[in-house]
Length: 102
Ligand SMILES: [Zn+2]
Image 1 (cartoon, rainbow, N blue to C red):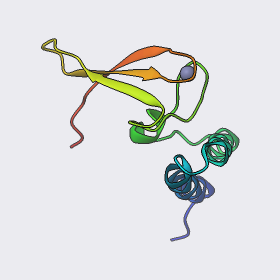
Image 2 (image 1 turned 90 degrees about the vertical axis):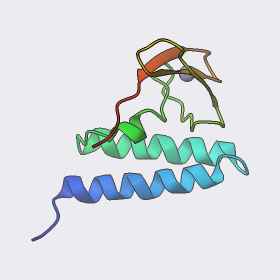
Image 3 (image 1 turned 45 degrees about the vertical axis):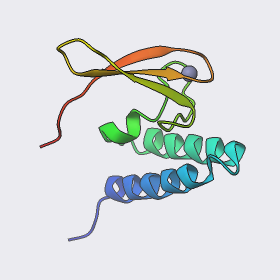
């Protein structure tokens, strides 16, 4: 079975983001470029990014914000398990409800 263009695109996105993650500390500018490239690929091929990739982009300014590097993450104390992510670039805070992947 031949992989569909969407599968190839997703694979490339994952490879690029992995690179971006390893560059984020040594070369943040390059990492941002790689991240926006990955984002462009996903738009071009209309690939829906998996949850773990989507949460690495700020919803407001679309910056690449890998956890612990460009984002502050706090765990909510309510009964609903959630984390709060604050973007370092635009200070936008959003909440994610933690859903255990099955
Ligand atoms: Zn932001």
